[in-house]
Amino acid sequence: MIDWIPVVFVTFKVLVFGACMFFAVKWHYDQDKKHMDKRALIVTAVKLGALFLVALALLLWLTFALAKHLGMDLRLP
Image (cartoon, rainbow, N blue to C red; front, side):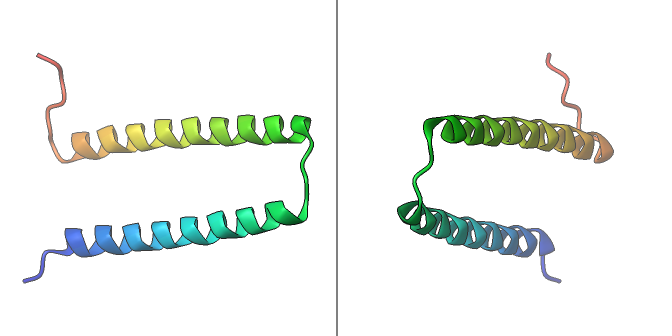
């Protein structure tokens, strides 16, 4: 029987990296066409930073929830 965990994680990783590379190339291409003012750049950076922190907190919470569901003991000694 095949172990599905590596198949799922590798597929997910390839999809995420592919999407990130597409949007990174698209963003850099679009930046050549327009020039953002400093205020818009700062607002965008703050929004992305906040989004990153929220995603990080959600991932941490999901990790601990999954570990608790699987019966893992994550208490510090």
